[in-house]
Length: 335
Image 1 (cartoon, rainbow, N blue to C red):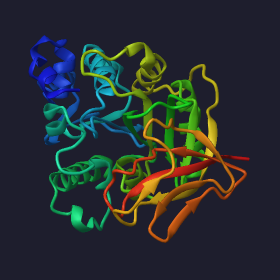
Image 2 (cartoon, rainbow, N blue to C red; image 1 turned 120 degrees about the vertical axis):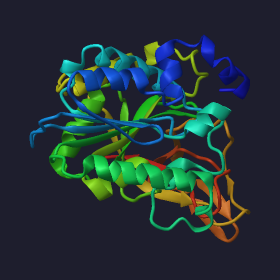
Image 3 (cartoon, rainbow, N blue to C red; image 1 turned 180 degrees about the horizontal axis):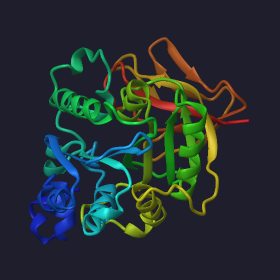
């Protein structure tokens, strides 16, 4: 999304414009008028909770715009929340809605100083003084307040779109540490939402969804819903299945028709150790491109990353990340 297009924000549908700017005024007012406890604990965060909570009421965190140039989920969620706010009695969960990097959205950029989705960690090193570090602190505090006292049924859907093409255009990253039953329910629901592949993630890379899974026991997932597009010009048809699944989830149902996603395990994580880091394939390489055993993945000085299994597929290859951060992951089909 170019900054110039955002300057024409007034031409966008009202619901999209409001969510992109984290203007919750009308939506918050409708839920409050219906008797919900409504809060805005941080910039870009709306919480809607039942006035008389019950232990079995799910708590659902929806986050969009963690990367400012990933605008499709903003549109999808804007319409979903707008419709729900006009029938507020249908809300069957406690809801936290988070617009992650509002400033980057406004600037038409992926981030201001550094990737917000690498900031959800205790130690940030040279990232500690960045704009996004402060933003992450605000989101961490609001998230803790939201989940504090909620029942065991906790969800976090962090909705993204991918920079590059993918052999599975709609896929998700699911932390391995999620307990077996909520993990099974999450993966089944992702299939209802049109997710074609799921990658099991054994370790944190500083992402928002891993943080909520690790620190708050949430069934958290980073969901990639196709390709990056311009705000107001996204093809919402590519989000139709996820929009339907989300509509049901917020109204208390995880049921629906869907094909079970293919599950991948993480074979290895590729870390950029120095500025000498290079990858062995072009920037147009699609996610889930297969490589054969012995193929060189990347070189970093004396360190050479090679394929260890008969076949591994590359996901999120990005040589431009900062030193010390993950530059890609290699995955294999789960047994």
